[in-house]
Image (cartoon, rainbow, N blue to C red):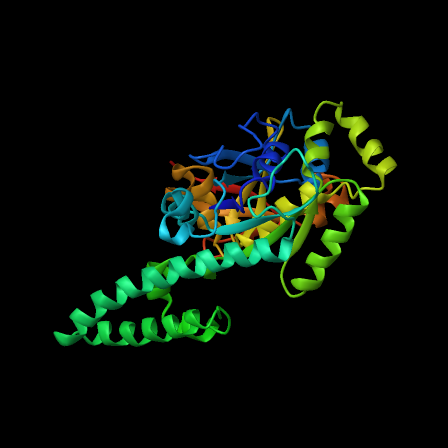
Length: 358
């Protein structure tokens, strides 16, 4: 599971990536500085984990993580190969969620590929390129399914009908209202892996000034129904030079939301359809990510294959319940630890102890 950070050149993708990873990815004020995507594992913010570690006196804390890809800047004509577009679009096909960075700052030292700062136009350029790339991919599939349908392949006929419908829809610039079609043709949609239909959110990259505030408000008005978070990318990178405890007070002094980066990570986590479960003992308090709807036998496999193979039972208590009790010994005395079998569906923030035989 991975998130792709996309956008036009010089909108601050790598700047935000650096703030997220605290890594020294290449950042420069000219297009195509990033050719191969930077990759980083980002820890998922989780204050519960620290509290749980305190209850168990755990020596080590390990957070769940998400993989982020900083994909090179797309340009108008990318679907036709402009600006190494085909290569960059291929990187986007690898991701599960798209985070579209939108420039909401003015800086004479950082050029804009269109020579003007217009967040709405930037979004339209990227979405159009993704749509055109999808139309081209669908047309290639249409040729394939047409040949198979002529030979009497009934499945190919059904697929051809769906592909023709999508081409017509996309040529009108519409990517909505395909939910029912997706549910009826899930296997085909997974095979098509269309860029325009990937879960997406917008990330407004701001400076701490009035110009950015005006641009951000215009952006909010233009994409009312889409997920959007705001991050002060340049400032967040500068704050990395300060000790952790000084960053929050500095943000507060500037009147800036301190949860921009955390909000971004958590929104991506949710859009990846992930939940968190915990394994806690004296050695380690650890958070694990798991696809929503998974069974406890799947959780056992995440921890170790031996646990999955030799699964006997799982001892389970939800994090919120344990935190309210305040002691694992008290939770056991009160009979709050549940015994669950392999078919148990894991709930978000479950604490799980797997009993198994090798």
